[in-house]
Length: 165
Image (tube, rainbow, N blue to C red; front, side, top):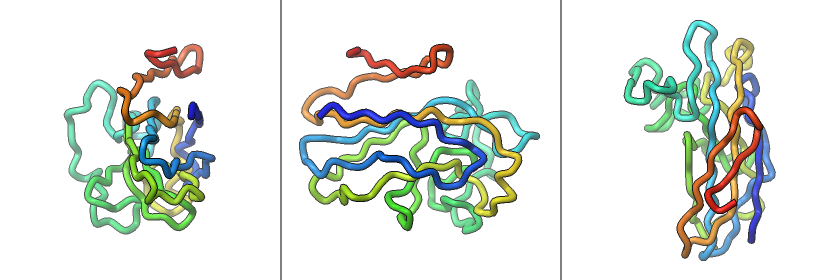
């Protein structure tokens, strides 16, 4: 079941549909990883997939937290401006992906739903006009009984590699 997807998610677009889906099998998980930088505002530094400035991951800016702020695409408790977020299906509930997220829903997963990806920012299209950058996203199925392989993105060659490749 070696299935792998690669996408570049643009900061200036809202929800971007992918072909990524869950397996519906207990023995198989879905791993989604992201790397890269993007900006939600030209006056702010570029951030990584968790919404943090690379090299300054420990810093937390309270005013960038989006928990309870319904004007943002993701306003859940882990919502943060600039983070990579996703949802299952066009009408799904948003959730944080960040640098890495694993899905192990097994047979309870709706395999017909595709993963949509976006930068967490305000819902208004005007707010995205000054966004820039992309997140490089790779998703793959893996055997849950084996250790998950380590993936890394090479910006210079524009390719993903794994510890097993």
